[in-house]
Amino acid sequence: MHLSKLFTKTSKNLPADETALNAQLLIKAGYVHKEMAGVYSFLPLGLKVLENIKQIVREEMDAIGGQELIMSSLQPKETWQKTNRWDDKTVDIWFKSKLKNGTEVGFGWSHEEPIVEMMKNHVSSYKDLPSYVYQFQTKLRNELRSKSGIMRGREFVMKDMYSASLDQKDHDKFYQDCIEAYHRVFDRLGIGGETFLTFASGGAFTEFSHEFQTICDAGEDTIYLSRSKKIAVNKEVLNDDVLKKLGLKRDELEEVKSAEVGNIFDFNVIKSKEMGFKYTDEAGKIQFVHLGSYGIGISRLMGVLVEKFADDKGIVWPEAVAPAKVYLISVGEDNKITDQANQIYKELKDSGVEVLFDDRSVGPGQKFADAELIGIPLRVVVSEKSLEAGGLEYKKRTSNDTEIVSVKELLDRVAN
Image (cartoon, rainbow, N blue to C red):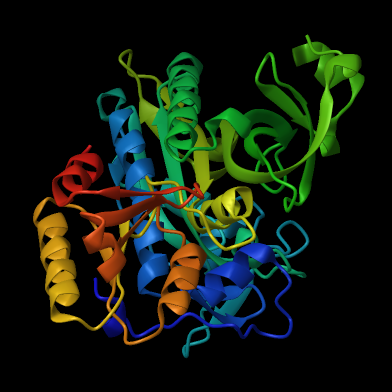
């Protein structure tokens, strides 16, 4: 991608009400555009990051048997009335409206009830189970406050998976498979070492749940964690009974700020009974389906990664999610420099390496500053100075050291 052709530009200006570091940096670097408080549009570079995060999650969900679909955002009132979750006293974050014929509808804040209604059309026998489906969907939640940038929005992208199992044993196995898959996701994103399975409240879903909390100063939660056991308890449910249930002792726990990046809920057969989700077992008896729900905040993860890894110069993307692997800079108007930069760009692209080529007619100072702000893992500079030294200037975003490498060395390094 040529930076001169990218319709977005880096900026020094910010919306007056934007206080979150993740949003400040993402706006400055041209990844997102703020529509209003808690609502952000994802621009070309931002979309690449989102899609890279999605792909990692998709691969891990497919690996445990998930099938991807996409559901509607508009949801009928009647579906949610079956579990009493249409009532604003039960769920206070609904966005609701009416069709022109007067029919009441809601804008999806979650999809548990709608997925049950859908699956009832396809599951009738034990032969139809288990079934695991997931989607990447924009959720809409009428939050009272939204002050953490893309880490807590009124509109955000989530991966939500739903499991339908024959019995508690089958459900428990998949539940554990999902926990392990989530750990692999966070490892691949570079935050596995600081992301903890956390005992938490079920909120509007169930009495209790498990969360995945990442240590983060900008987070809105407080957890008490045991690093040795890699488990934590959310402050909202911390009590002696919970600690006893887990072998944990108060004097071994560390209090930290954290951001929730995932959650999993065990509904058992409660929701199935409320909604009449049944199947016929091998003996011909009617049984209720065991259900589970598993979420990962895709856009929230993007914000957490910014908060976790950014430095005083800008964003620092983990290579797995960066919008490109190489930030290529051409310094000088000499034809030899331009030709060499274009050739390197072509060779990198031909090798399957994503490149952001800063070919703009601006000074080198701005190019170097934007390279740091945008946060691509590797910076390669083609200049008269580098060519005289026998090659290209090579620098990692996380390092202050530069070195001169040949074109062959560059291709070998980035290909590996």
